[in-house]
Length: 202
Image (cartoon, rainbow, N blue to C red):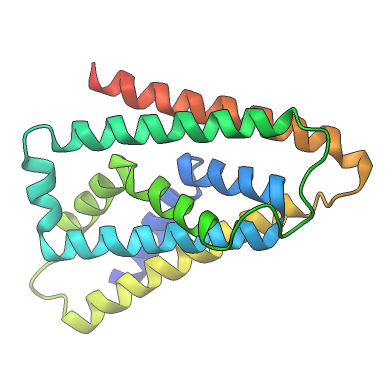
């Protein structure tokens, strides 16, 4: 139980810190409502599942050790965040927002969440660091599996909660100004995160 609790606390502190995934969920929930925010959360969860599989199987060590491996991920992540930021700022200038739950094909927000999570090199490094410290031969396979499920559940529930809080602004006309300002600010933050990724390579 101590192992699972330590994993839960460390992961929640990491996932609750605003980063690319957080601002993508905010953008999509502001633009298209709770359902799209939850679908984005599902895509992020799939990305986390892939990263967990890579870390637990040891394949992520090959990626990190490969010459230019993390650089390539960082550059791809910066490009993707720049594109997402541009979309948010573009949407903030529109006169009419999509009704809640529309504005996306169902697969699009899932794909956006998946790509955003996989293009963040810090996620792989976090799991590598966490497991290198906590995973010992004494930790059984069922316990490792339980930890992975716990991480996925915490991730999905947190971002769904974020989507719910953002979507509560509704579609009443008096909230339109807030939505526009929120999308514009989200776009700027996404650009700042992209710039920080590029800066880390210099």
